[in-house]
Image (cartoon, rainbow, N blue to C red):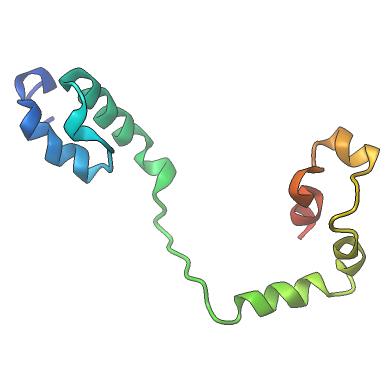
Amino acid sequence: MFGITFQNIKSKDLRPIAKAFGVRSYGQMKKETLIESIISAYINKDLYTSSEKTRKQRQCPYRLMNLLFSDDFADDFATVGNAATKSELDAGVAGNNRGLWLKI
């Protein structure tokens, strides 16, 4: 970082960096573990951050209800809570009514 190896930086100077990347319990970690956690957080930061922020709006629940009770999905929604069929179990979409949500 900035042309300086992590081994030459003191652990107390690494803590603000760890805090910026969201590393938890950085005050109790050994220096090597802290360095590995910072590197891992830096590599994975793109996976957990989204450039596009979506915000729930007032009409979202009503739009979902309109969709669930529409003619296309009403029959499938009526079967929520029933035992899964063999084809759903074989396809791996039985848990949490995943098949329905994939269709929606």
